[in-house]
Length: 200
Image 1 (cartoon, rainbow, N blue to C red):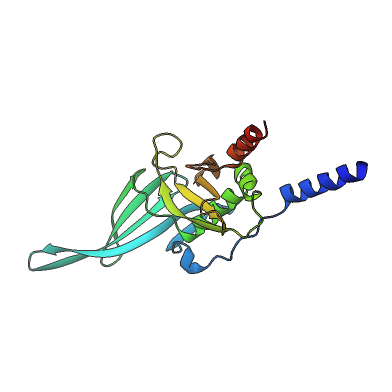
Image 2: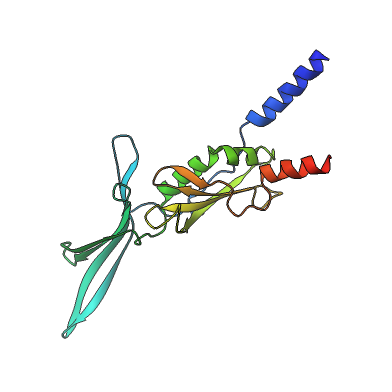
């Protein structure tokens, strides 16, 4: 009896603590890299520029050209829009929590790692032994945990059998997961509840 109990415990431990397998990520599956990025001494992102474009304004008989840069500061928890003259001189700088822009490749990789280390997400991973695919890149806003300036993003894991095995909202500003089971129809907790009801 002791041997059977030991084997059962060992099998359970392996299934709970086994590392999930993930499909390889490709550049084409991720957002584009930051145009400019700076890090603090601990290696965390301080500020990044995620997009840049040029535009022109009619002035008299001709046109005046400007360069625009949009980005985000993790220190200020605000986005920025910088306007430069054609010769590179900074003309105007706007800061606002509502200036957001999509996340960069560097942020996407951080969001995925935060997601993969969350306990609720790990429990979801443990419901399958199949290779998983992770998607991210879509920003999320609400009026509480992910109000403007918090830089929240959807992260989703799928398996060949389940199109949404895990779905969380990751908050990049403090590396947290305010919504570990966001909009989930089938979660580990619900599966366990359903199984316990069916055995009664």
